[in-house]
Amino acid sequence: QQQVKQSPQSLIVQKGGISIINCAYENTAFDYFPWYQQFPGKGPALLIAIRPDVSEKKEGRFTISFNKSAKQFSLHIMDSQPGDSATYFCAARIAAYDYKLSFGAGTTVTVRA
Amino acid sequence: GAGVSQSPSNKVTEKGKDVELRCDPISGHTALYWYRQSLGQGLEFLIYFQGNSAPDKSGLPSDRFSAERTGGSVSTLTIQRTQQEDSAVYLCASSWTGSYNEQFFGPGTRLTVL
Image 1 (cartoon, rainbow over the protein chains, first blue to last red):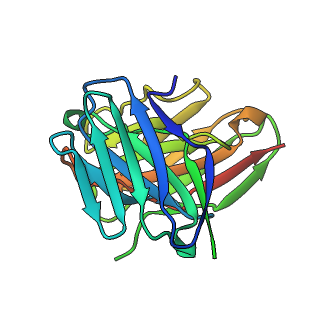
Image 2 (cartoon, rainbow over the protein chains, first blue to last red; image 1 turned 30 degrees about the horizontal axis):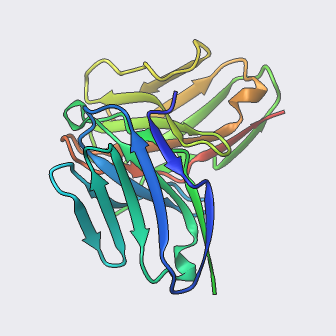
């Protein structure tokens, strides 16, 4: 039973466009929400993370928006580049337990030049 | 420094055989995790080791799966009597201790059970 639901499964965006990936969760005890980026043949790597005491976090072209009341969070990739083509996973964790990330199913992003 | 390493990178085995997958965590990391990534699925938590504490085995899908961590460093995931549904990428991660510490993932072992 997946605790974090992610959509869409895949998306194609033109270079320079905006990629948006959405995630929803049910467990209100989650208090740490990281996003991971995975290239083919590689393990996932932490991209950006947010805690529920803020509604938005931006790092370069990547922004997380967080809506605590709706139990939803999303990743926006601004000015998408071909090098951003990868699979993106949202995740959630009860930080006090210090482990056990619950992952979404992943979104494959393809950026067309 | 070196990241998390895993071996082998690919493993093809016949149904019913046992396999061992190895993980070398980042030096000094006290926490080690195993996840399974099936096609089209997210990562599924399998097991967690933290220092000398008893491991959290709550994610292991059956008693055919076991894992150990020797000397607080290298870990081995063993799958006995492999089944075709065990085919997946097995990922290992390690981290420092702490509530928000980043988990660093290895490249994974792709297991194919024929």
